Amino acid sequence: MANSLRLAERPRLFRPKWSEEILDEVRRTHLDKLGWDEKLADSFQAELRRNFPESFIRGYESIVPNLTNDAADRHVLAAAIKGGCPLILTFNLRHFHSDDLDP
Image 1 (tube, one colour):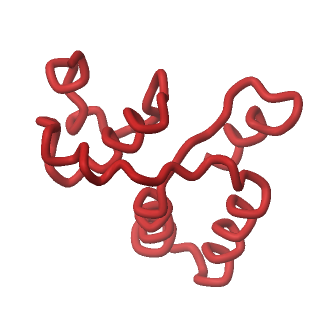
Image 2 (cartoon, rainbow, N blue to C red):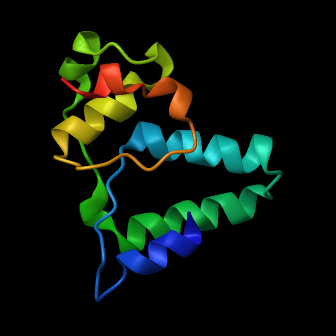
Image 3 (tube, helix red, strand yellow):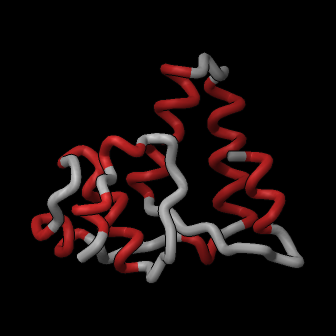
């Protein structure tokens, strides 16, 4: 993620979007799966918030019940819809089938 964020710096090739819930998942992944030190994970989060304050998507919660992708990742799709995101960048393709994304 950090390397791809360089492409979001000025001059921007894309504008990243995320929600608080997505960043919570990123932090848990850094700590629990990647073994990052808590201080490093917190620093990463602080830098995202400082450098990309316009990236936060809010108010997507009412969309979640209408979605059909994996329940654990409906918040991601809902945030993408609310934020007008043309794509979702994820390694977790099994939770985002085309049948669930097409509508």
